[in-house]
Image 1 (cartoon, one colour):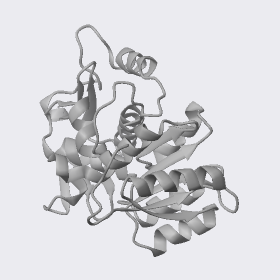
Image 2 (cartoon, rainbow, N blue to C red):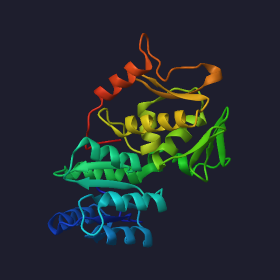
Image 3 (cartoon, rainbow, N blue to C red):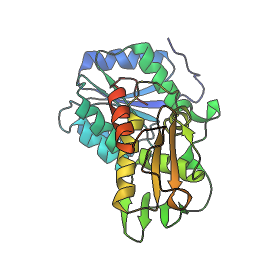
Length: 273
């Protein structure tokens, strides 16, 4: 059992329509020291998440009234810093990609390992206790950028003279980290720790998904910087004036081949970053 302090207990909203699963999860969460609010349909879960002060949402996807994906999308739109871990019996790749794409923090499939789920919750809530700063909480100018690429911290969008694109919460934190040191190579481990706030898992999909989506948006607005993959190491944002990379740097590897290798090598996992 993963124990947390009873002092200042975090409050978890559990949205699960199966009463047996809901009560079992709630019992174990309370044993671990969390306060738990239980809801049994998507509409009630959404209203509680928006109305009450909760620290994390455990959201089933197959819910009556309003499906969990739709409820999560609305929560992320209105409370972008509230972490959501999706819990579902569905394990299809497309479902996970959709959840990551809208900004969910993690994804677990039923049946799941209770100890692992509790560890993920604790890691997601711990954040600064391990000395990992929240990028989105950093002080600084409201506009950040390189060349003609601008990240608007208030609008959570990127702008260039050629257009604008909105970012989901994880795309925003990822780009903010990369823009903090243009040209610097960030390892996968560091990115996952600083953006997802828990330990790097080699089989994670979430980082790969968000890199592809962010790269597409940078290309959409014709940014004068490329999000480059250094295969087996990590990523960097390279301003074009420092070197017009094709998007991937590795000896003898093209951008397309490296991305294909990365995609083929990344496997779906309940322990997504």
